[in-house]
Image (cartoon, rainbow, N blue to C red; front, side, top):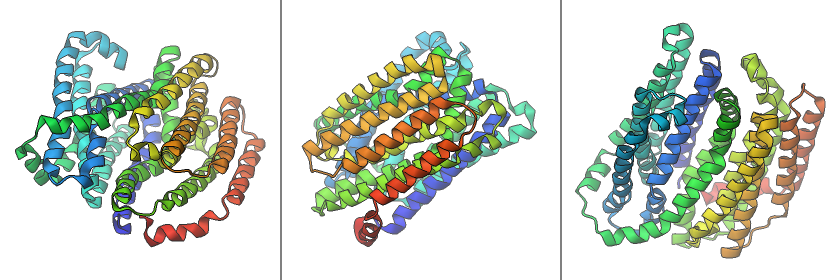
Length: 468
């Protein structure tokens, strides 16, 4: 992937993440914690639907794109099965409309349920269209689809501060759904020729079987990974309240600076590594990238820990606890990003059947820790539980990849990762007045990491000469 294309992806993701970051304090000042929690629950449900009904075929599309000639038929073969199943599911869901709506949004109002069903379809198409654009390497189109919808939603949220009549939850949920629809409309506009060719393409049922063979294990893994990512919010809603969900979601949102880098990296990493494998490129580059990601991630964790005391200055007083749990929240996306490289051998070796086992183990650990910690620590317990479970996920995925593909040095990763994780647990569960000791602790980690990875920076010149 050319550097210009990479920068296009990065700029779109960066600006989109910045807009999302700016939306957080606006939501906090304009809406109640409960309303924020309900929107988060809708987002969680939509993400689960997209994971399940994609059948893993979005990842099959990425895996096979560079190795097939009829890409239009590949797109249609991947998109159609899940869509048909989603239609059937939504028709059946109408029968259980009231209990599902009550579970999802805390109300049995059919209006909210209709918006939720509409959002299911919108985000299903968004998942596939985003992959189609990425594989075409249309960086500008990708950037526009990331920026425009979030700019629209931010504009709406800010306007509610001046026009209080826009603050009811029914308007908020409609604007959220419309912002998602706007993204899909823009994507479809860019993809109109691709989609037209896909609609006209002839597909054979025999072509679907190998795609499902690769993709279905990823569905199981995706659902388990969804649970690993969002079970803390669900259990907060059960053991605490929607207000606690809103608090935790805002903390996770402020950790979006880490999510930004994870999204940028994930956008380009899998297509790149699969192309390297197909082209026979030297895979020693993987070790260089892995070391660079580890250095970046651990230093970022330390910096966030040092400056977390600034967060309460931009939020209402009821969100003060975010200062303590944000480091635990930032652990998850950064550890996952590291695992994308350290565990890539599982996908390269086409051994994705092992991924659900790894994710399920981490999920069960997360559930157990949440049951133990949430009643006592609330959102802090949820943040710490997810951080620990993600650390186990990184460990298991890395070790399996080493055994299936190629060996990567791991001692520094495990040492610095353990120290960062332990520090985030201490900081998260403290939940007391600001202490100088935490700043000193994170400064020590930053110095240790820079020393441990001191040879990595010169190696980055190799990446600049052609890794990307």
